Length: 347
Length: 282
View 1 (spheres, rainbow over the protein chains, first blue to last red):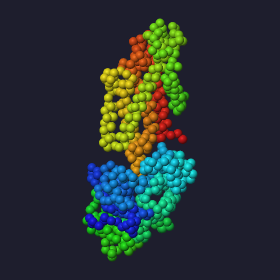
View 2 (view 1 turned 90 degrees about the vertical axis):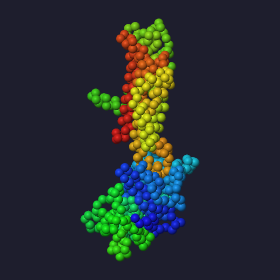
View 3 (view 1 turned 90 degrees about the horizontal axis):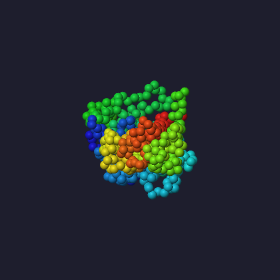
View 4 (view 1 turned 135 degrees about the vertical axis):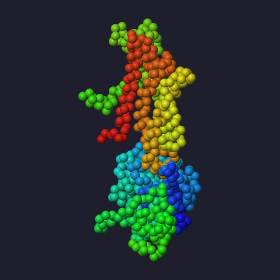
């Protein structure tokens, strides 16, 4: 396994502009039947005010990566076994549990998938939007907390927030609930928001509204957003840079422009080809053959080997090295190791 | 016709509500409602039958016992003992059990294992037998009866609440609270407790019935609240030897027990249906 995978750089923000810098993060799940390398040497960066995408199919380790950043595990037997996460110049891996709680929600907020499940049916919306404030600033007097709650509710475009403050989640529509969840994340004015598939439960029009809202909020507050998704459409709309994850590793990263114009990894190419194009005459969508690999029995070489149309013998034996894409990004693929490799110039 | 009638009764429990309201109110205002003090002995008027029987008088509506104490007054005051005892036990045992159940279900792991083994141990004990032993050790008093029953109620609460907490801890809002930096204590009391409130109300009502029965059984066995405090179980026990001839000594306190337990269970069933989110009427 080559050792130069420690740093993923995609049009990298200069050092002083770095907000989040994840280096060679490894989170493994220890089961009786073996060790699942859910996150296996992931590195990426997010600059201040930047939008970065983390793309991959279900089970590729996206959510596990995000939770590892804030050092929370959804599975009791999961453990961070290696790597560092630097946030605003501080190494989060060195923080105590109490210090870590100060980061969660206050400096790094997370928006979760299902908005309906993300809201407590027994608390009013106003109470819930104000909850993160109460976790982090107990001394904040109630009037100023309510004022802040009203501000963020207004920011996420909830009409008449002072009236709706005392209503319960079931009195809100799906799109509004998702905006309430966003308001909870925004209430503490965090530097980074991790949005874990925030639009999967929404229909397409509401999804578009929500994305626009997030983009506007980002412009207003200058916060960075890490978009975790399997939806390339979202990535194309709002991200500056993208990281593509496969089987617990980042296999390709680069600017959105480059990635969409010229995907380098065969897996990324497959993903692009399986997105429906409006007006295109194609009967069936492209499908990547085979299934994602069994994370308990990962091969020593490239995890995509079995499904790869460009596989070579070397791919099975050792993990591919990191190859620069020439514009700050990189790809991990043996087929791209020589500049004359056929697919590099291909759109 | 009958089925329809019963169904309508179940939908709005007027009868159990009325029974309970009467009981609670008369227990609270016993000194004003009861015609006589419950321990007032009147040997001249001992063993009077109820008013509707020959020899009975309207002065003692439900008759008198072997030392001439008014049965009606004793039944009313007995309600005080039963309801107070149920209240204390639910308050102390229920609170303890709820907290244990919440911790157990939310934390899982070692804490859960330890708490649940304790719960199982308590639930496997026969209530009456243990109570008998402990009353002999602690001495017979209202407080010792309360203290003995608390662990049993706590165990039942802990078991039920744990089940709910296990489910709720996996909800999105708990994950979101964790991600937003909430402490475990805050999550347990702010997010999980309100969501088990429905369950708590239901178990509490169902347990009231069970508690009154146990208290009566203990009194009947002579290890409950000590005489001459009027307690329903004690009255039934006292009248047992005259069962063949002087039925009113046992019938009326017995009826009080039946009515209370039935009413409370009825109300509990109804509450369970109302609070069950899966059975919502549109």
